[in-house]
Image (cartoon, rainbow, N blue to C red; front, side, top):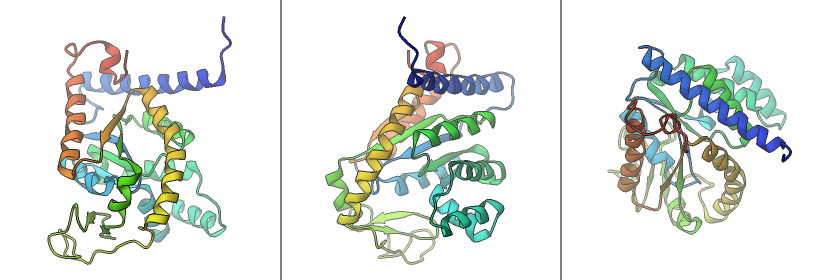
Length: 276
C-alpha cells in the first residue's frame, strides 16, 4: 500500500470541505431555507492585470445584485474608517509587514455579515493569492453557509496585456475601468456613470506590468490547481472583446443553474459541482 503523503491529506481536506459546503447548500434549499436565491452568485474572479476584471465585475454585480469585494480597496476602506480590523492592519503595514491571512478573511466575513449588498452573493477580486488563503477562505465560507460556486479565471496571453494595460483608464471611486481603444468612455476621460474624471495609474506601464505578471503567475498557478481539484474552476478566454467575454461568463452561470435541477443533471458529484 502506497504511503499517504501530506499532499494527499491536504487534497482530501479540500475535497471534503467543498462537499460539506455543497451538501449544506442543497439541504438548505430542500428544506425551504438557508440557501442563496437562484439569481445569486458566490465567486472568485481571477486574472492578470488588464485581463478585464474591472470591466466584468461591475456587470456581474449589477446582474446578480451581489457585492464586489476588491480586497485591496476593502483593506484601504477599513483603514480609512478606523475599524478594529483597519487599525490592526494599519499597525502591521506601518511597520512594513504584510497583513495576515486571518485579518483579510475576517474583513471579508465582516462584509458578508454586514454589507447589505452581499445578501444575494459576492464577487471576490484579489483574494485568495495563495493556497493557504484559499483554504482559510473556504473554511470561513463553509462555516457561514456561503460556499463558493465558481472560481473563474480570465485567461489571456501576456503579450496582449501590454497594449491593454498601457491604455487603461480608471474611475478611482468605484474601480470601474475603461480603455482608450478597446473600451473607451462615452465622454473623453470621464466616467460613464458619474461624469467624474478618469485617471491612468502610474504603474500602468510595460516595464511594471511585466514584473507584475511574473509575480501573478507564480502566485496564481497553485491557486488555480487548488480550485481545479474542488471542481469549481472555470476558464474564460479574456482575449475576446468585452461583450464576448460577458457572454462566456453568462454561460458559466447558466450551466451552473442547470446543474441545480435535482434529479435531472447526472450524478450527485456533478450536482455538487464536482467532476466524476
